[in-house]
Image 1 (tube, rainbow, N blue to C red):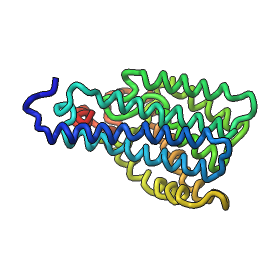
Image 2 (tube, one colour):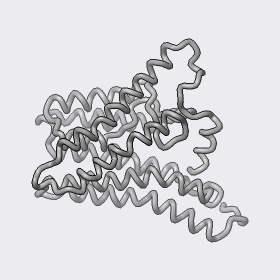
Image 3 (tube, rainbow, N blue to C red):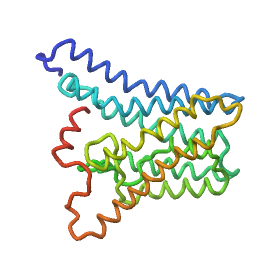
Image 4 (tube, rainbow, N blue to C red):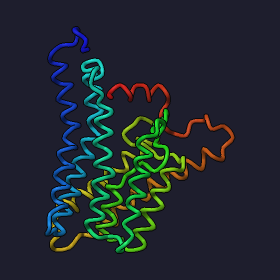
Length: 265
């Protein structure tokens, strides 16, 4: 039951934040409707990726809004984390994998690799320790929306695309540590800062018309951040594996920081 001491305004604000998170479901439905059209142009896919970017912005900001209204106290009977996970699984896994299939980026008969990616992502989402106490993802964090964008925009097709998807799917089961940019910690803050130029380039690419060709020079430039992100993740994991004391600080957040970050949802 709701706390009678919670004001009506805070409850309304709490539901507004949940609705804000739930907008991801509408975006997912919009993208699927575009992908199921009989005739799809490059601008159709550009619109899909732009909607995915909007969903990423919502995902990056709804936790801050939830913390601001102390949403757990305002609406204790509604679990915003479950809603967030539902939206994330759709927008980061199901929808981009569908796009890869509809864009025919894989050789005929190799669609099975998308099922591997789907299963791996489901495994990752169901792991209770997928987000570590010091602000990292454990295993490849199912960024299939980003994978789909670069596969389409560069483009990367055929057996190379199959191999890349398979490798990333298998990395879901490898307990490597990947930065979680929206969480506290030195590495996370650095990765968030470095993501901004790439995000701006990506936005410019998505706001241009693709009927006259994709501006691939900017796509390649923006790809430097995902490549650096993976490099940092693997270097950070190797450092923890080989150093004598795993409890030493590796530049992520402290336990106190983590507890503060969990207050949103």
